[in-house]
Picture (cartoon, rainbow, N blue to C red):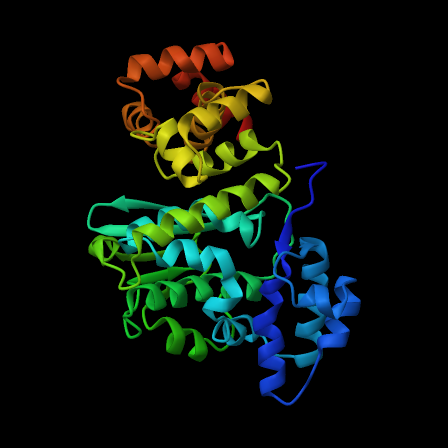
Length: 342
């Protein structure tokens, strides 16, 4: 994503300040120096700092403390005050599901390089977390974000003992995961294809005791104003591509679903893609081509199975698309690719 540097509210470092104070250290001046802000700016949640600065600060904290679990420990210090208007908007919604939808849209208020999306897959709600391509996020930082999300859901519902079914991380398993088990209290998967939290779908209907329709409208209007003030990176194509590429199957996926995961309306997403001289259909077509060639090269799946997973109505439709992409049939392309690899 050239030309854009993701930023975050300076409030994301507040839990780390609290963690340091608990251990008898005041690192305020060091953090101000590292982020090039005054103490007054450090205390102001409207202060934005570039993500590369935060990445360097996080790396320094890891080096100084030697604590691989610093992200999990700091997440426990994340209070509602630290999330500011994001917390105000989400806590006044009617259900956890509607709070999560609002959270997807207003995550940029906390960090415009981090993204959430959730889908219901049967009886499971899958909450995915990802970051802008090229963002340098340490695995302990990813754990901070995921732990913060789980603790936020517990706080929203008042179910402090409620645990997800599974938590998935893309990085390899650390040597000691006792703290992970204590905090998440569920099945843990490392080296997974995507970072995500899996919970029963019924949890989305869990009512929030803090639901206040009048306040929700007030907070939402303020959040919309702040959202419009943030720089808007022209990277809709890259984000759509990343979402589609992360799907196991491309059937039943729609522009509306992708827009929802980005916290946008379908028309807004279409407009942003037009501004980048492309469209959802063009991006989907390219992702399908890449997925088709990968499936043909890596295994012995039938053409019908591949066509179905890519969202084609029939193998014939898939083959017509494949000829358009490559100038040859899928079967011929597979044979030629295998012969070349011998």
